[in-house]
Image (cartoon, rainbow, N blue to C red; front, side, top):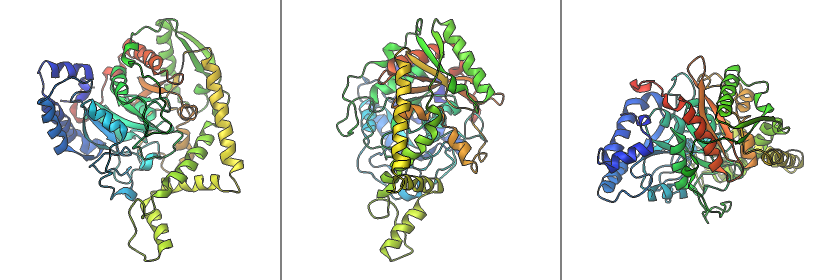
Length: 488
């Protein structure tokens, strides 16, 4: 049984009607993992004993929660009590028990979802392909020779392969939306401050957000309803009422004002991607939405701004991983200063070290004003561009990524091109806005293409409404990869 054949609503009905038990459902998740994960390699570690024990407990209790017995996978930078959390880094290979759960984990547990394991990622969430993991190489279920995207590559691949019904990823510059696009699933980056970051190992604190990856928009909204909300443990958590997002899934977008930035179709965006997104805009027109071209003049600077700010924040956040406070300590020296140096140089991968050095340079007294401070000022200009567009329009629509997934190893030595893969997603993080990726087509190689819908701050309802209307008017969400013998 591949779990991508069933929605949360369908599984809930089956559980309510006693067509399947919680234990059987969770067991089917592990059976699917055993069938396909040797090829996909989405999971870093499983928690089978505890998951099946939890499922049996649920079978003996009341089925009265929205995610009752639904199997989930968790990105490995979200801490889980009693289960190793490594951020896919050798540095944290000894972090066997974080001693507490992230807030989102406690919320999922209260909703009676069953976590089956921790998912692979780019080390400390730094990367766009999951090739930077310190442990294994996750592959795209649509074609095992291609990357699943990153940094939440394991989270997207596990859902696409039908190993879990939903997963949690994190998005600092596109790390939920980009792998969702590459793997043909639905991924939401919520508004900054909507979902608690307590228990998320920080990469860039002003940019990071936890969000759900699912097969459908409705499933995505159901998960967000559980994990969203104020948390006093997160200083940036917004104390607002969270609505019932699924109520917005009416399929009606008549009169919806859709802005299409001309910059989203500039040089570097693949012709197949442009064609698929333009066809998606025609679908919106047929549904009664009003489409107009707009300009976001400062987003051409977004990549440079993002890599300066994100790297600077990473430099500060990762200073704690020194072999003393956190992390593996080198055994090759008795000198304290040398121990610090060697622990970090041996524990961190090349991409992490590269970004720490960039960030440390940008924060240095000599260059702080020229780089970090100037980047923050341009960030404000980017945020203002979005604010001006949203004075008139309800959503912004365009491609999620400039291209479909690329081959494993193809971009490893071309860092500038790899960094530019995030050019359509990082502006959303810089502005703190919500954005979702939904499948909107396939390349000539049969690889998924993603459509991105961006909304106003804390207006996930409209984002979901627009994404759901497109999804229901098309059949892309009904297609699945053939990994493990599933029908496409």
